Length: 301
Length: 213
Image 1 (cartoon, rainbow over the protein chains, first blue to last red):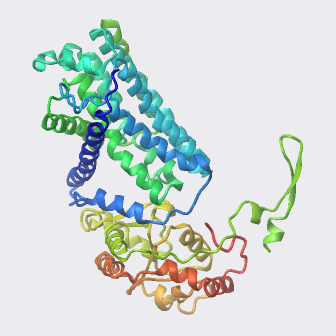
Image 2 (cartoon, chains in turn orange, cyan):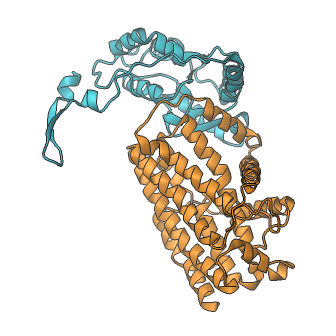
């Protein structure tokens, strides 16, 4: 990887754009789900107000150093995912710090935030946090299995672990997309995506009706503000990653916004139709069809 | 009372060292709440606007009036469009709705929940019972005036007020917050001894720290 200091401001600009997209998606998606439930729904700028409010509220409770670091680790995970992933194919400005093995780093960073959160929430000493974290980790781990199998299949297909090269191999029309050239891996990957987007049927971890709001039970004020910032970055990073791997990437911001929004809507629509799974049910579900599809995708390559 | 329920006891550490544990002092913070003052009036105004438009209610129905909150989440009333949301933890909420009568047993939990919320925090008294006891004015087991025990920002009278009245109450509360007059948390910190004396007069078995951080 050739390091160019001039890339730092451009990468940060890309991060700000992704954050803005994430904030708007978080305003529009609840609006769509509310309309499906015949409600009017929140104002589309409500996430911005909530974020300002979080930072305006007193933050006086601490449970130790790890409690502070939990949200920081979480945000680090989301930010690193964006900083090491090419956003716009062919653009020097928004290719960020992509390098030969960035797909592996991306998989690591996807888990990093969750682990940091587990340490922080564990330190808070709240029993609900501990239950929530163990549920969340179990679900994320098992959803990673079909995802990793699908990515192995794609990596073997294109003979590379670099996201940029995988996107490059898909240029030249829909018929070159991994979606068409490797449909089994795409199916396994998209089913795995359901498990990590915190939409029904896989949102038992954060469900207020289950155990009060799961891991972030004790987090408030600025901590919650940091975690909410990450919740605008992290899902968009994941969606952009899926766009790069399976759906041909993007050559400009318009295509990126369109494609990422459509991929984002997939877990949302599934969530509108299917009721929530318990954690043991979702683990069994991921170990059946999605994992078999993943194994099939690897075997077929 | 507290000492009797949570006495000193000796604990042996993993390395064999023995030390004495006083649960009330070692496990709980004994600090008193402090008055929060903002340094910049313009920023405070901006923050107050955000706080008013993002009211997160702690999901704790203290009395029969809690039944009036449920319809607000349905398509008929849909309070979400006004920036109102429900959270299941006091740490993330900034509005506490005392919904109707408050029994002595519930008062203890209400105080703990209120103190665990982060300032600035607001309290809405729902129903006549929070104003003067309402139809429970001569009950042996309920409190009569809510603002003797925790500071209240606005009341919604009625028995029971309809969900529309609650929506109207939110709008009134928003005006109070934007005007910068919703200083319940600071009032509580300033008159801490008075509130504690009132609370302890009602709650006979006081077995918790004076302020639940």
